[in-house]
Amino acid sequence: MTDSTARAPVADEAPAPRRPWLANRRNLERALPWLVVIGLFLVWEIGVRAFSVPQFVLPAPSVIFESMWKWRVPILDNAGQTLFTTVVGFAIAIVFGLVTGVLIGSSSLIYNGLYPVLIGFNSIPKVALVPILVIWFGIGTIPAIITAFLISFFPILVNVATGIATVEPELRDVLRALGAKQRDIILKVGIPRAMPYFFASLKVAITVAFVGSIIAETVAANKGIGRLMIVASSRFDVPLVFAGLLVTAVMGVMMYVVANYVERRMTGWATRGMDGGLSAPQG
Amino acid sequence: MTHFVELDNVTLRYGGEADGTVALRGATLRVHKGEFVAVVGPSGCGKSTLMKALSGLWPVNAGTVVVAGREVKRPLEIVGMAFQNATLLPWRTTLANIMLPLEIVEPHRHQLRRRRADYEAKARELLRLVGLSGFEEKYPWQLSGGMQQRASLCRALIHEPELLILDEPFGALDMFTREELWGVMQEVWMAKRPTVILVTHDLREAVFLADRVLVMSARPGRMVHERAVELPRPRTLEDTYRPEFTEITHALRDHISQARAAA
Image (cartoon, rainbow over all chains, first blue to last red; front, side, top):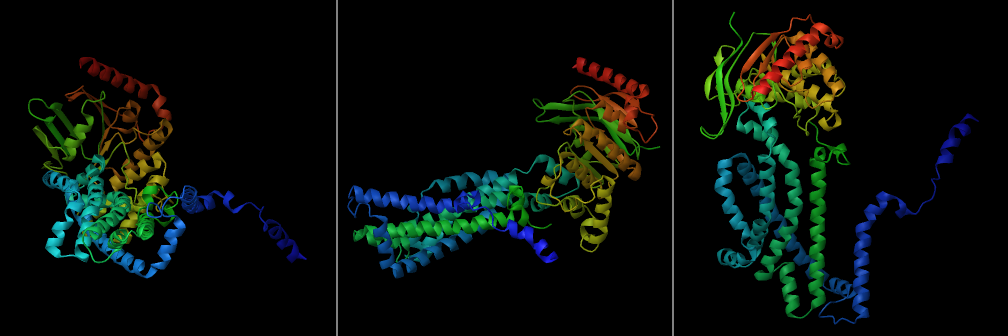
C-alpha cells in the first residue's frame, strides 16, 4: 500500500511531454553543424545536376564520395602521412611558440630585438621556402614538417607574448611590493594568465599547420594528401582532388575539436564557468 | 621616539628631467609604529605616487624614504599592499590567492611545502576575521566586489607585514559595502596592529579609520595640513554622524578646497 503511493508520483512524472528532439535547444545546437553540412552537399548535388556541370569542373558530392570509397586505401595512407607531418610540425611550433613567446613577452629588450625580425619572417609566403627546404633536406617528410611548423608557430608566439606582456600593472605591483623577481611574476602570473591566449591560438595554429604541410606536399613530396591531389589533378581526376580536399577539411575539424576540448579543460576559469567551469583546474 | 616611516623632502618625477610630470615635491611624512594614518587630497595630487615611493616601487628623484630604519631603494618584503581593484588571480581559488605572498616572501617561500597546513590555517583564520569563511574554494568571479576586496585585504595581511599600504581599497565599492568594510578594516587593525597608510578621497573614511589625517596639496603634491583624530575606538557608523566627527570632516574639506583653489 505505502509502496504504491510512494511510487505513484514518480510514475506520473516519468513520461515527459513529448516534444520533437530538435525543439530542445541543446540538441539543436549539437545537430546544427551536421545539418548545415548535409544541406550544403544537397544544394551542391542538386545544383550540379540541374545545370549539368561537367565533372572535371565541379563533381557532384555523390561522385566525390564514390571516388573517396574507390581510392580509400591510398587516401587513408596519404592522409596518415599528412596528419603525421602536421602534428609533428605543430608540436614543434607549440614548444617553440611557448618558449619564444614567454621570452618576448617578459622582456622588452628581447621584444624590441626579435619582434621586427619575426614580423619580417612571417611576411614571407611559406610556399617560397619549400624549394629551399628541399635543397637542404631533400624531398619527403622533413620539408613538410618544417613548413607546418614555420606557418603555425607565429600565432602561438604572438598570443603567448601578448598574454604575458599585458599583465595588469597593479598586479605586477602587488607582487613586486612583496619583493618578487621578474621570474616569479612570469611564473605566478604571466604564464597562467597567458594560457587562455595560448589555447585560443592553438585553434588557429592547428588549421594553418595543415595548410603548411599540404603546401609542402604539393611542391615536393612523394606522399601525403597534397601530393595525392597534385597527382589526381594531373590525371584530370577532379573527383579525387575534391576527395582530398574533403579529407583535409575533416582532419582539420578533428584537430580543432581536440584543441577546443583541451582549452576548455585547462582554462575553465577564463570562460567564467559558463560550462567549462566545472572542470576548472584545482589550486 | 623614532618613526617607523620617515619620508623626507621627497621629489618624484615621471618622465624626463625637462618635460616630465612632477608628481611629488617636498613631500614629508612621518608615521609611528602601529599608527593608522590616512592621506587625503584633491584628485591627481600624487597620493598613489606617494604610496609607490613608500613601497619602493618607484625610486625617488630627491629626498629620502626610510622604513623600519632602512632606506628604501627597492621593494620591501615587510610591506603589504591593497589597491582599488582587488587584483585577485582568476585562476586561483580564494584560499590560493591569499597564499600567494607566502610563495614569494622569504622565509615563508622555503617553508611553504613543509608548513602548508599551518599557513592554510592562518589564511582561513584571516578569512574568518573579514567574514569570508566558507568561500575558501570559490573563484574570484564567484565573489561580489566587496568580497573580492576582503580577500585582497587578507592577501595583503597573510605574511604579517609591518607596514600595510592601502591605495583607495574601498574606492570602487558602493556606499553600504564600503561602510561595512570600514568596520572590517578597523577590526583587523585592532586585532593585528600593523602600521597602516591609507590613501583615500573619502573624508568620512579617513576620519573613521585613522589616528591622523594628512591633507595633500594639488600636484606637485606635498603635505599641507595634519589633523589628529582622537575619537575613541572602536568607532561605529553612528559616530560618523556625531558633531565631533562631522566637525573634523568639515575642517578637512575646507583644507582640500583651499588646496584645489591654490592649484
